[in-house]
Image (tube, protein in one colour):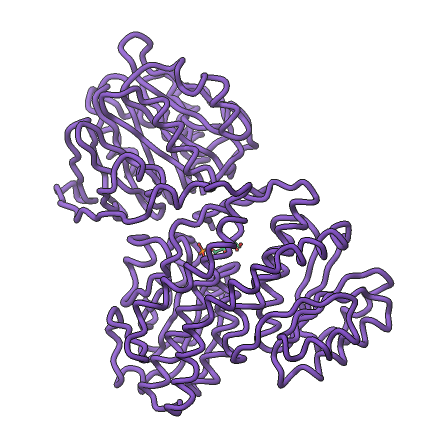
Length: 610
Ligand code: M6R
């Protein structure tokens, strides 16, 4: 969850570290800190509770802190409240070691007691501080030896950046279950928790594996595996544009990313549709394996899970194979029925979500084949999968996902078409119709986004509600789940999504005059049924904001208080249009409530702790 960056080179490190942290701040933003070494000042640590800007102002953009090597950290608190003292870097008692850490040291209590018995005084509540002191404890003039001993002693997940004042030409990076990359430059090198921190300076990166330890100087990077054997890592070129990780004139990343969706969707599908056929060259799974497949298990968290819910409806209908969708955090504890004929589709924007990673490892252990849908190239989930289909959304910075969700849906449609054709469960007529519609969908998405003023107006009518319900049936319900999550995570309004028919089994007791219900009713075959549920809530005094397709708009307007219409499309592709007003609605409501849209409270973009 935290963002870490390290720089060693010939330029002043502090401004570069702050710049890297600014690009990583979406990973955690309750406090930040840097440690920079210079011969004059030794190892100097500066930290501040709050957003990075507080630290930035405190050290005048880094101008106050001299030195060519250092570490930076932006924190999402796990152990200990957000505060100056709990911020990273954590220093060892001697002041010799500074450590930044993403992850959790599970046996920190036992190590802390051990060190206290040896006279060490702790100043913070963090688990990370034990690592700094343990480095001191093991240090006998050999930094690497101390690091290795510490790594053997600790349990848990970590990405570390370590600096030692006695070896001021080098940084050490170590990883287990938390992402860490190396960025290679000419006369400088970086460590970072993701590539966005370094792409302004270099596009040449490699990805550390679990157990790896890297030693970085200005002119060299040496990487060792868990057996301390020297390993060579493949170098990759990152093709993300620096501007893609900047706001480009928008007030918020979320607004920019919402508007980027038609293009991101197009980029994700276009290279994979050739002469009217879905071509998934990246997939190694063959027809025989598909035919033998006993079921599909979809594993994901949050919005990616909501894509999974859409996928269940879509894939079951098109493939006539059972599809189960599981919350990754539950999967390992539900004794899942998985065989070596099960295909497990893993969905993740970041490719680093620890619950998803743990669940997919369990699925693999049980024999499943893993196909992942991932946005971040080279991420752990991508690397551990048998097959990967990347979403070409580019960097997504806002904590609330929008374009990743849309591009994940795009990949699900491609998979559905590709598998259905292989399995002969689709007629050519239907296949051609879906492929054709898929190609015009970005234009239809654009048409929906052009209604943003309209949706802003509805947001202004409803932004004071304290509880909002989303109802729908089938894929409309799946989109309602996403609409509800979007709203609650950025506007802090309580919200629930309900399968419309389920309301009367309890939740309707919460409907009273003035309650707001967002009714999704784009699925023509279910429209009448859904409208009956709308009438039920209206009779109990609810205000209803309806969402449907243009051809059903007139019918809906007779009953609801306000309606948003999206262009008509094939039912299967509806979620891609219906979700857009949901995202805009949440965005404008959060804006009107004065919320910190890109960095909602308590959240972080990449959830790397369980
Ligand atoms: O990176 P992932 O797709 O694995 O992340 C999963 C969830 O943490 C993520 O979708 C989260 O729910 C978003 N903040 C929702 O906007």
